[in-house]
Image 1 (tube, rainbow, N blue to C red):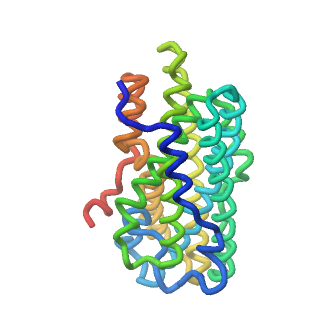
Image 2: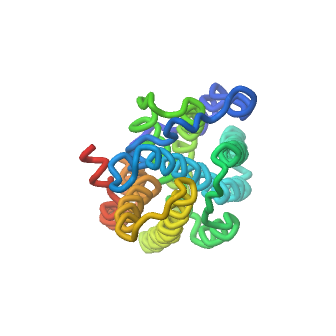
Image 3: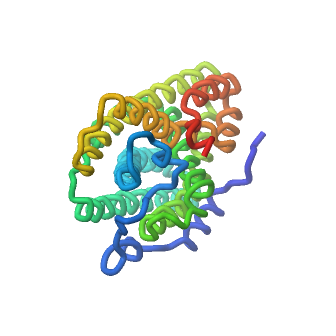
Length: 312
């Protein structure tokens, strides 16, 4: 039984109402304010870190904002070809469905460009290099090597993750840099439609599969999660290096260990747990595999919301 009323027609109509250009968000007088945080505390988890002063916590928050955009751009690099391949395999579908999916792909391409421009603005203003994982092409290749349903589930998790980030944490936070917050808002606006389209894609891909094949696809989805998790842990190390360079001081081993522990938990919640535990993602997965949903729920618990954020 479906847990939603999503349709290609409605998603396409809504996407036509949500139209914005990159130039509306960055460039000219639209600049980043480096005196303010970029990410809400629920995602950055920097406010309660021991051993850092207020300025250093802001620096780390901004470094996290930089990798937030980079990592979103990275996943868009495998979402775009996946959606195009999905369209290519169903060209006999009704025209409105093809148009909806092609528009989905076009918006993802726009997001890749958007994130690159914001990162360029960040690098110009922050002035300290912030290393990132990659290259995106290699990670995309590793992800796309899995079953299409595995990839579609990973994308669905990311789409619902985006919704949770904005609605639960970003929207009501007036402390954030307005330019960065505006980017997150406009990204959320288009991703709201993508989450609905990807839900339909997951259901279609699972429709003709046996229970054993779906279980195998869930295995593949979990393997993708492990690929992403390994990348996130490496990104934390890069962030710690950037923080020390930006602050002009070396952290003690004890400080590094405490910050590493907190940031690993925050990164895992931001990019994994917040999407895996989203009610709509869980409902879609449970609709195609109850056993798979139980497995993923157990894994999502490992990537739960950091205690420091919950306490805050």
